[in-house]
Picture 1 (cartoon, rainbow, N blue to C red):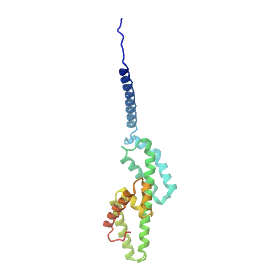
Picture 2 (picture 1 turned 90 degrees about the horizontal axis):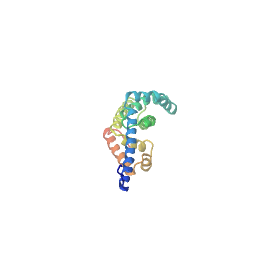
Picture 3 (picture 1 turned 180 degrees about the vertical axis):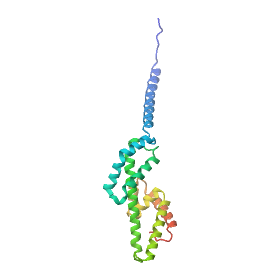
Picture 4 (picture 1 turned 180 degrees about the horizontal axis):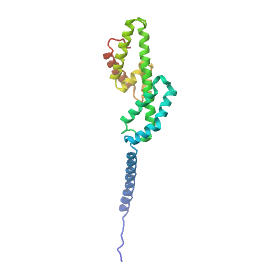
Length: 205
């Protein structure tokens, strides 16, 4: 006759807990394997994303902003950024990432053009756009301005342009970016300091 096996209440609880964690572990492992299979850093997966969304992305930019913003170039830049960030962007988020990045690239260009236009208007008060002085000053400013913007990090550049180009107040920028007002003030101040170093010969207000 076989001996009777008695299981205590505590042992039963431990078995239930063990089975619960084993189930969680298996699910996490399965999800990890699924993410690995669909890792967009893999060339074949990335090419599939490009083939699926490149035309839609181009059309989105073209119909929203027109041909003057070079939708082909902006779409390509967005895919380059996706590839650079392929380890942190999941397959499910790839489309959203592409459209957001491309849209922001266009908006940054538009802001840049506004700054240049504002400077040109100020310069025309002292020079006509036909004089050698104006042409030289304009060319010099454009080069210096590009260099100045490139010297800023993205956080500084966005905060500075929202304040100086779009005229938004610090509190409005803080709400839009989801940061505190103090953070916005610091970003604008540090951006302005860097810009003054590069654009010391121009009147930046």
